[in-house]
Image (cartoon, rainbow, N blue to C red; front, side, top):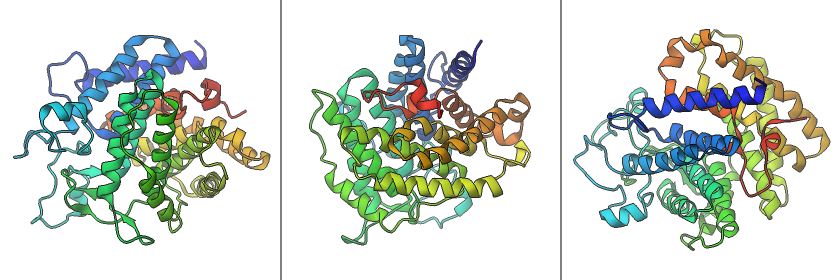
Length: 392
């Protein structure tokens, strides 16, 4: 079995186990949905469908979208409130399942207005995260690109509209964002701004609008221009540099999206792509010096490192849009991604507590690192397996 076949086979096993374990298929248990993990899972199923030609993976992607909307687009079972987060009736809620946003899927209910903030406990409390919503927008858009069905793109744009309205605030020129909002989007739970939230918002909104134009028959829906202007303005005062592996992976994945969108007359001046790659290359230098790679598995978080490996898989997508000097710098970093994936493929590294406690997200992102096409390649722009994985 060659490397490509191994990656497909191993990713298929991981995703099949995930589907069964979380109640997506073959189980009488209540579905266990978590928005970030499920966004990557949808993309993985799309990638497997593309690589194997098996329609069952496409059906799993569609089924997961439907299940996420019916679980995370509605109030929790232990909440006094019921129905769709949007407040729409059942029929309208089915037609527009993202108009109220989507819950994170944390194990504990959200913090009540009278409760003091406990920063440690807040990590386990429900609510809505902007950077999870943008991941889901991307997953929905990828389904539209894979199937040609415009509904998923429309749902993504409706989600973008409500997220922009809820998470941004302040006068023109001094707009800011909120990190975490309540389930009904009525109040902030954590008021600080996520470092890369404006970046994710900008690129995702441009992607969604590009897809709308690309797909014939897409409903007009929300106009993203105001959101795009807001996010672009906030980027002028946002520091993009980071040495966090998950953040670095996000910068590289975003650079891959920009490079592809550039073929459709978006981000034509190259300025944002240059800024992202400058920040990413500086961060990679720091991570190589001070990262956790020398630590044992028990002191490392797999999903954060795998996020970097996924981002490094986008180097082949970025290279055509950059000069040779930048391309060489990126190629020199490519081996790091393979090193991280190899580390977490080792069975002895997947029995430690830090892996088991985050098993769903770890296994799904490990699958993404093995078959990154479904997540990284914007279908309809001529991408291929070599584009997404081969930096040579």
